[in-house]
Length: 127
Image 1 (tube, helix red, strand yellow):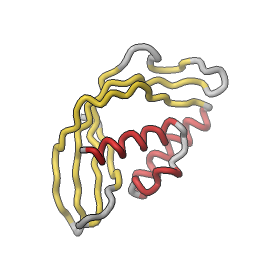
Image 2 (tube, rainbow, N blue to C red):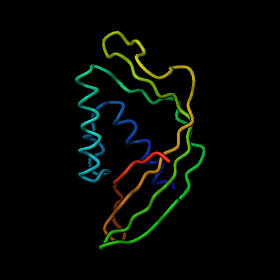
Image 3 (cartoon, rainbow, N blue to C red):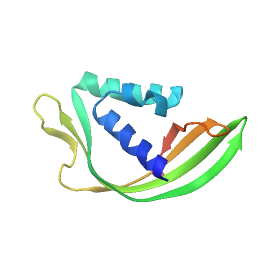
């Protein structure tokens, strides 16, 4: 659970900074490509997606399994946060709310080669 939270906060920070370089080791190649596409779109639109006042209420292990020499674990993350997008030039809010927190629930799936290896985020899904 602690490593899930640790990964969660590091990846959210990288997302907000629109720079995955510091978390490349925490992401599978596929996940990095997926997130980078979304970041590239934000950069093109000159927008910043801000995730603030993140309060993780609960992390539940939903599933754990092994397949083809890989360990997998899926955690359901429950949190409250501010999720809004601003114009990078004016700072104006273009979507979401800077004052009303939302309830956030996402499944984060991590994988690693079987054994005591570092976990990497492989999928994010909405319940």
